[in-house]
Structures are given as C-alpha cells and as structure tokens.
Image 1 (tube, rainbow over the protein chains, first blue to last red):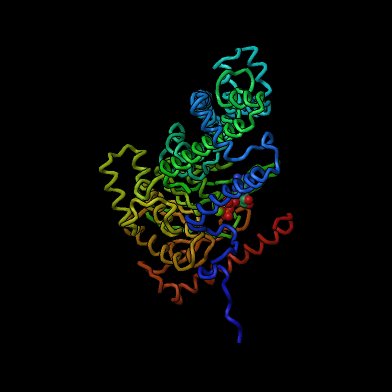
Image 2: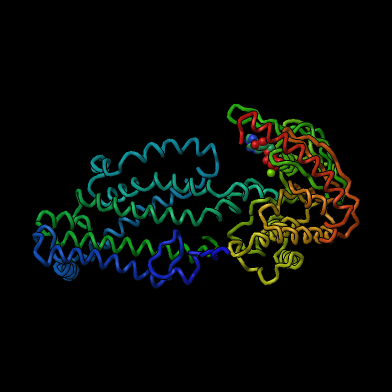
Amino acid sequence: MEDPVQVRTSPERRRGLELIPRAPISTRLYMALGVASFAFILAVWSLLTYTGMLDPLFLPTPTKVAAAAFNLLAYHGYLNDVIVTVFRVFAGFFLAVLIGVPLGILVGTYKPIEAMVEPVMAFVRYMPASAFLPLFIIWIGINEPEKVAVIFFGSFFQLVLMVATSTSSVPQELVEVSYTLGTSPSRVLWRVLLPGAWPAIVDNLRIILGWAWTYVIVAELIGASSGMGFMIIESQRMLRTWNIIAGIVSIGILGLVADYGFKWSRSALFPWAD
Amino acid sequence: MVVDGVFKAYESGGRKVHALDRIDLTVRDKEFVALLGPSGCGKSTLLRIIGGLIAPSAGRVLVGGAEVKRPGPDRGMVFQSYTLFPWLTVRQNIEFGPKEKGISPSDRSDISSRYIEIVGLKGFEDSFPKALSGGMKQRVAIARALANDPSVLLLDEPFGALDTQTRSLMQELLLDVWEQSHKTILFVTHDVDEAIFMADRVVVMSARPGRIKKVIEVGLPRSRDYQVRTELAFLEYKRIAVDLIREETIKTMSLGAASGEA
Ligand SMILES: Nc1ncnc2c1ncn2[C@@H]1O[C@H](COP(=O)(O)OP(=O)(O)O)[C@@H](O)[C@H]1O
Ligand SMILES: [Mg+2]
C-alpha cells in the first residue's frame, strides 16, 4: 500500500515561518512585520549611539534627533521650510504631469508622434537634471522658477516615457474587440486605451513624485535660502548632525504619506484593477 | 456570407509565411458552420480576415452582399483569450456595443438584462470581470457580441481555455442561444467532438498553407443535447473527421520538424 500524499501547502500546515513563494499573509502579520523592521533600525541606531560606540557628532542618539526636530519646528520655523519645499515639489510635479501625461498618452497611442517624440525623450532623460543645475542658475537665476525648472526637468522626460509605455501596454485584443463592437478609430483612445491605462498611469505618477522629491532637495542644496534642503545644508555648515538627520527623516515621512495616498486612491478609483 | 478566393501570406522578419491558400466558402443565413483544423493551419487568420481585423493578400469576403473592408458591428467576434473590458462591469461590458450605436440608456439596459438572462448570469450584473470564472467570462463575451445584434457571429476557439465539464455545458448554452437568436455562426475549433456536436457543416482545413480539405454535412437532428455524443451516427462522423485531422496534424508536425520549428 502506498503512503497518502502529503500536501505541504494545506492551510493547517502553513503555520509558523514556512516560506511559500507569493503565499498571502494576514493583514495583522503584514503590519506587525512592517513595524518590526522599523523597530529593528531604531534598535541598531540606539545600540550604536547610547552605548557611546559612535561619536554623537558622527551619529547622534534618537532622543537628540527627536529633540532637534521639536526645536526646529518650535523655534526655527522649520514648518515654513517644509511648506516651501512641498510647494516647490508640487509646482514642478504638477507642470510635468500637466504636459507629460497627455503627451505620454499620445506617444503611446500614435506611432507618428512616438517616432517624433520618443527618441528625444530617451536621449534627454539620460542627462542628469542635477548636472543642469549650474546651467539653470545661469539661465534663470537663484529663484523659485529655477527650483521648479529642476524638478520639472528631472521628472518630465521620464514621465512621458512611462506614461507612453503604460498606454501602449493596454492589450491590443481589447482594441480589436472594441472595433468589432463598432468603436471608431477616433474614439478608441477614449473608450479603451484611457480607461485601460489609468491605473498604470497613477502608478507612474507615484514613482515620479518620488523623483521630484529627490530633485527638490538637490535644488535646495545649491543656492537656496529656504526649504528642507536649505536647512540640511545649513546644518552641515554648523556641524549639527542631529538637524540633518531630523531633516532627512521628515522628508522620508512626507514621501511615505504621499506614497500611501497614491496607493489608496488607486484602489479607491480603480476597484476593478488587480 | 461568402469567402471568395482568399489568400494570405504574412511577412515577418524577411520570412514569408503562407497562411491561407485560396479559400472559397459560402455560409448560408442562420447556418452554424464549424471550421476545424490542426493548430497553425490558418483558422484564426481566416476568421480575422472575415472580421475585418486583417486584410487578405488576395480575394475578398462578402457579408450581406457588402465587401468587408474593416471591422464592424455587423460581425460580432469572441476570442479564446479573455477580452472583457476589465474596467467595466458585466452589464457595462454587454452594453458597450449598444452604447457605441447611440442607443438610449433605458433601451441599453433592456438589451443587457435580456442577454444576462439568456447566458444565465443574473446576480452578477455588477461584478467586474476579475471576479468571474473563465466560463462566466466567455458567457459575457458571447452576450456582449450578441447585444450588438450582428448578422454573423465569429468565434475563435472560445471554449479552448475551459475545463472539459464547463466546456460541454458552454457548447449546449451556445446552441441554445443560437436556436433562440438564429444568427449565422462561424465557429473555429481544433476539437473534433465540439465541431460535430454543434455544427450543421464542419469545414475541415488542411495543414499550412490552409486549404479547405473537406466539408462534412452533419445530419444529426436538432435540438442536440449531450446524449448525441454517444450515438452511432455521431461516432461515425467523428471517425471521418478524426481521420482527416490526424492526417493533417502529422503533416504539420513533419513540416515543423523539417523547417526547424518545435
Ligand atoms: N501576425 C503574424 N505574422 C506572421 N505570421 C503569422 C501571424 N499570425 C499568424 N501567423 C502564422 O500563420 C499561420 C496560421 O496562424 P493562425 O491563423 O493563428 O492558425 P490557427 O488559428 O489555425 O492555429 C501560423 O503558422 C502562424 O505562425
Ligand atoms: Mg488560432
């Protein structure tokens, strides 16, 4: 007689830490693991600093950084810097989206437009926006338009290419089926390509916003008199490591909030998508 | 519907693939014709030419007396791959064609309700495709094609991805729908059983380049149900068709081996 076959993926055997590729886990476990990894980073940081293993000037303790953050917000108008930076990010990002999304959709839809636009975009996107900074300062000066231009330049070309890919990834079969249902070529963009591409385009925006955040800090490190990047570079001059770290962490928190905002709106707007 | 001397060669990477060789075929009004052939013989190509999605290299197709130039709502199509619009609910998918025609919302809703009833999807009107099984998706796809009231329905191995049980239920469902709506149907398949069970005539195609090898008139009485499959007459038709297909499949395989394909 043969032994009964043991199915290893049966639910009652999925306890413990058996790792099954792509197997789902409970929301509680998911959150717990997320919190745990933050706790781990904090623990390593504490271990390195409270024990005196590292010079506080090199890496200050978590309490010192928390105090610095409070100090910045309460007495040094850091909130104003945050608002200035957020405004710059949104101005540059908004402009890039306003022009880049429609252009990307056209590039992904019409071959002649792709032929005209795509090679230029692919070329320019390899020129780092940060290297253009000195040029922008000469052209535009050290002012708000210069900051916005850096962010725009850093995100626009990438955005166009990503949106084009998202649009052209809508399955051709859906286009064909719409033709057999009476859709005309001039309406297929509105009836099939756009509705099919929206979720991917929202994902593109989420990624590009991350890039915009990187570029705003770069722009503020050079020739700025306000903003989160300016605070960071000022603190470096005065060797206030704790302020630098408080600045970096606050950028991270804002990024995380924006990221979750996009994820949430994606599932709220497109309940049909995976 | 008349297919008149259709010839098709694909050009890909400098290599010419001769897919169809002078196909002549007439499908009568309200007839159910199955197009049977080994995989790669050009069945999809022929269906796509009739649908107007690709142009023939030579020859022409007439539907209702007019030459096919482009796809249009007079020829509904159903594909093997699931092609429901994922952002639309079952009801909205079915109403897609009527909406393109400019039919009023209340009339559209009457049409979709009727076809939801016919394909047995009551209760799923507001589901998105991702929540449906493969069989349900294909039922919606059939309903969506029919909701446009086409004169011809073209189906390209619509049940090819379904399991055997679902598949035979879907075949009966399609026969029911056909008997109620009396459309002209051209049904592509490589499954001999499926072809004989459903069709008035089975058009057997040869290996590439696809030609019409033989047309089998299936004289089994209507309405057919699953028990037909075990009757002697059915088995006799099946034997004839299996012999023809086997011969062609062997040709395809040796052809593939000779030209270095798998
Ligand atoms: N777009 C295409 N370009 C080049 N060759 C193609 C194309 N579509 C199909 N073919 C070739 O034409 C032949 C017939 O294909 P198809 O009509 O899909 O056959 P079937 O549906 O009977 O399996 C195959 O050899 C296939 O490789
Ligand atoms: Mg095929």
